[in-house]
Length: 169
Image 1 (spheres, rainbow, N blue to C red):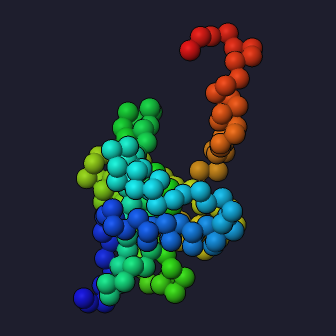
Image 2: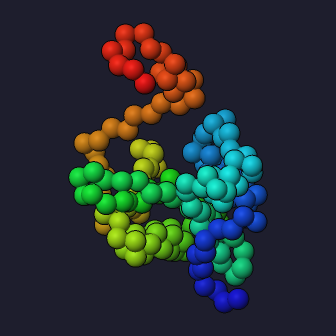
């Protein structure tokens, strides 16, 4: 194989590799204690009948160098689906060689092919190198938007709390 960057759709056999990249990404983001993903969950939600996300693997000289996971969302204002890049990670020793650009370009090509209205992602506010990189591609921060999140117990509590509700399910 030549010294060429290759981005491919992940396959079921890549689940252990994807999980290892997720754990490395979590370490980089100082969030290792938040990883609950297992091979079984990844297999189900990336490749099973309940699949709602897709994964890509980057290669250089036949060796895996990183991954990206994306899924589709929908813009009511545009009336079109969009792509949301959930995660992208490149091994530290492979950074600065064009893999980030290759992943983003590959997903942009998918967005164009599938007539998506948007291609979005989030980046941690402290991750200045990534922010500068994304802006160099023409992406712009959406500073007027604040992301809200419910997780685990909060979702369950809200779903089960009917006190004060004036509606029926």
